[in-house]
Image 1: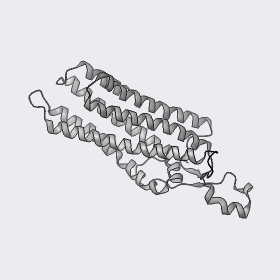
Image 2: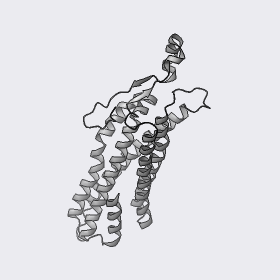
Image 3: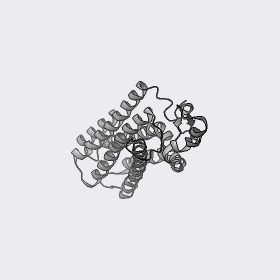
Image 4: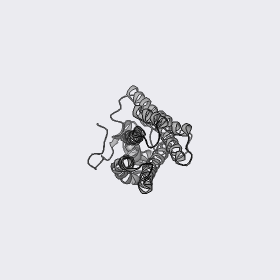
Length: 250
């Protein structure tokens, strides 16, 4: 985040053809890519168990998208370096500019898709455990509730940052340029607070690897062995099967 603020500040000081401006532009793209990756990875680590519980059919596709998203995120940094190394006042290299803008668009779209998925999953879980709901589909887990509440807020802030960044392509404004890092900062602070709260409610490492069985799946077992013996029953969710994908430790 420090690099992001430094880069944005430098861009407002130097001219667009100045070497310092070009360096600051690359710094901004790299910082944004890193923030996006950290936010998405952390959200995945904390939420993959909820996804497996709420929307199991989407688990594998989301897992694959998470595994390849670094390519999309850092592509914008690579194209920014290529663009800044070649454009001059005489030769603005519009093709490279278009490629860089397209890579930024792909990165932003990837973030938006994942944020929408996370928001849906968290909101769906909270709705399913709502005591006012006539058909509660899942048993409650305090850690999952914490993750869901904070996850919704972080995803909304991230979506706002992506939207503002897109608007910045249309309207060249210092105010708009400053809003996107602010929203990213809010999202990261929400995730940090979520980790602190999780530590206070009984450990952060087990949240994404153990799930409480949905009520609908244990109805038959309750009939046969009694409701008392079913308290605290859990099952282990699918482990991430793609090399390099972060998974919370048990």
